[in-house]
Length: 613
Image (cartoon, rainbow, N blue to C red; front, side, top):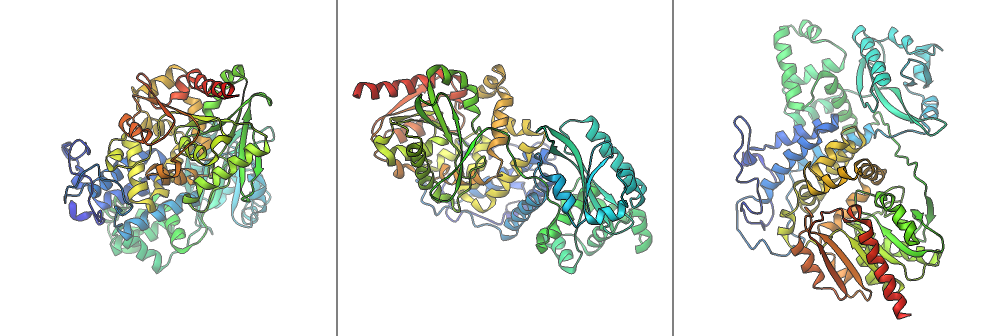
């Protein structure tokens, strides 16, 4: 109920009306809780569930959406929804809830990401701890010092069975079978031993072989944690566990079965089972195995200890790395003839350079030389220390590229959110550029109602970035876990639902896999690029782009679910030489849908240059 929500807008600014908030008038199905009943505890449970299972990310986002909207639309004064944002309408965050978001983010970082490893063999071999790398058939490829002592020079996983419980030995065999039979699996199991360490975590991950091929292998590491009174208190504060339930958790982590716990405590097995079920419900852990993993990571995050880490985001796309005058490394892609007419491509937040792959043939036929500098935090480009620095810093980087490669008045091609940086470039560099073409709408968010008009998933991320930026890292990082996993289809479905214009277009043209590869490229460094761009997406950046002296052609699909036609027209009306071109049958992904339409506009701007000459 409302009293469960412990953060509020300092100054409510959006009226409580069904037009701007479609969820408010929805009637909850029987047995479920509506918006006003989305409790803080439900959000906390959803946070930790998605840590354990990336496929539950959508459920977490639904819970968080209801929770944050209740705070934003909290009954109160009803000023004009068109009131400008002034930077003061932020949420008073519940410190405990914020701590859960931060802790869950730390856990995800400790768990690491399921991306191919290149040096994993050497990392395991040099480890002094309990660490094993093995093929699905049981052949051990490498072992750390502590593991090697247990294996006693044996090169088969079967040797590990001597210290595993009977049930854990079966779990390990099942994991090996999954690794052999199920491509793309991210399964993991917790193994109990009769020695130190008491628990091991075994998981399927990817490692690139000498040919660059990613292959599934099994990693086994000690699930390291140290029980303490602080750990017990943390569980009480985090999940409201009773003393008896805390003791259940401690005993489970100690390797005891529920029957053994009952015998040792003098309670009935029925009572212990009920208490165990209560613990799972309160923590959001689907099973005892997940409970062990979750609590171990929580303890380590709380005490600053290092837990198991996997994942080292690498990339196999051709590129070159440039050292800029700022001292940062920037990734740069190029395509087309070296003497071609220069175009600088600015990627969106998610699709990376995938639009260039779609349009590669078109670009070659036009004789364009395309350079694609990757913004800070995306791909392999170094991130910025503060998001507010990104516009000026990236503008300087592009200016260096123009000078270094002797580009004569290149045309900027701004795709989606990349156009924010494009407008800034046009304003700052002026006639060093030949103009800009924007493929897909982007406009400053100057009105609160603009956020409310967005499609659900984009709106939720925007709300979080605008009103609760401290919580944004976990929201983005959890979404990245979904991209990394086999649930990337679910991530795409939330952005482009089945039956939507852009989704139908991608499927009809066979572009779904290519777009998803763009997602994976964009998140090579996790959420860093998104966090930077989100800073600008939910703020008014129009003042920094006023007075551009070069022509701009701005395309907008009328079926765009994120930026409205009215928002774009309002922005363009403040600019000097911007042509607004509305595409009535297009959605958000203009460049994917018709590359030639966008490239025709680039030809048009080059033609203007030629006529001036």
